[in-house]
Image (cartoon, rainbow, N blue to C red):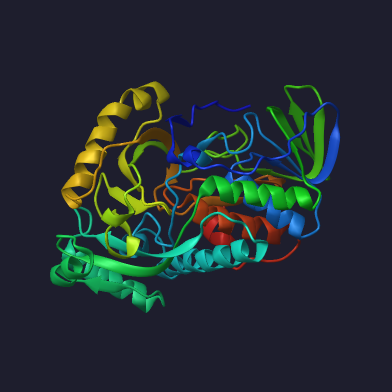
Length: 403
């Protein structure tokens, strides 16, 4: 039904922290539900929690198991700033739509924070400032223009010149945009908490289960599995990360390879305010601190999807990331204690695809999240839940397959 990808390799830092066990079942007979979700990563978990909150019966399947795909490979900089700067996105699509996309991402961060707090999920969530450093894509003057455009859109942004940037954060660079209110968290703990909440409301999780064929009629979706039993539902949601089923239309979407490292805990060496840091560069560098003082640093992205080629570069890319991190913060011990590689899907505009598959109105898909996986998972859960509950979402058109 779809190409199977090795979505990550190495040992992501999140495996250093324990998560709650997830109650899974073996699929031994046919089952029915209001909604069948394919995928038990962060997107599938968010959607399952949102739909069970609406009172719908939910069945989730995954061919690997909960959190065994690309969710564990994320570096979890949960930001509203999307991959495409507002200045550039406004040139690619209608400016009003570009501003809506940025505002929706900003709102998603607030909604996610509130959601986690209300559900009482212990995932180390906290607020963080974010620094977007001048680089080879946007220089100091470009950043000043970008900050101004964000403010015109109603999004707070502060342009820092070199002296304030150095005085406040100890970073020598031509300038930066300072933003506030982004989130730091543990993605595996969040995913586990959301799945457990969905199970508490009656969701059933079956794994390992591989979908081999998905068929839809006017009234039903039928999912055939390699195990033999069939899953029948009024609707299906494909939250399969970057393993795209054949029935998903060929959109302007490509798969990127990326690498990341994490250091030993060194809380006293972390830069001021533990701000997220990322560059307006290609290839870009980004970093964050964990709650116990490790530094996670990622980037060096390359535009290919071959897993063997990606994995063969892990040692070289980890060394490059360590070197770049050391140049920015000479007092840090940048020796990697963890190093991993992964793949992610992205789009030219930086906006994902979320919504009904054309000609298959009972099947929803979510794809092309780029560097904003968790933020876009929150938006996907809102849009899908509204659609299946019969409500309108004002931003459906921004993310639709036909846009």
